[in-house]
Length: 170
Image (cartoon, rainbow, N blue to C red; front, side, top):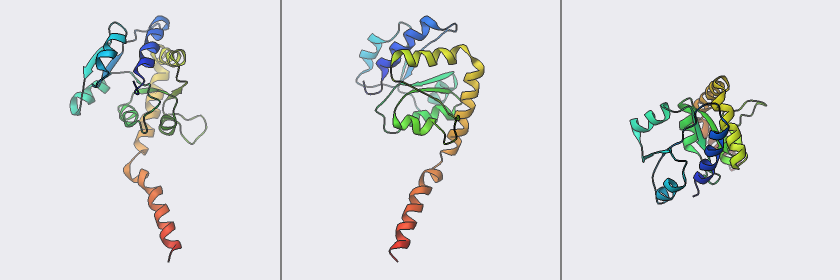
């Protein structure tokens, strides 16, 4: 439940009723909520089970849009994977999603942060499904953002803080 799949199911149902394009939901992963998900999901949702390695890469490569409905994940590593796979991303609004998807430059985004309700998420899904130019531009921006998220860039501020602290004690 904490992954927000119920939100995804409702948003996809709404998006299907509004989009000109075909909207198909595919879910990768497994866990104790899987049977409940299968009973609540739109009728033709594809469930792959747990994927890793080449199979997970192929799963990302076969998609056009990545939906991240979780509002409780502390760091959405899958967002970076999706962006690195050149997918347009729609995420439910949460601080970690905003951190990864919103750039420091005004107007620059790596993905869409939507209000965490089915109607808002569905509207963004429809916009991306029906406009391949917007989808491609967002995917390219996300790819560029993902390329900046390296271990060095993640650790540099921490190491700088350590250096400042260490210099102050000498």
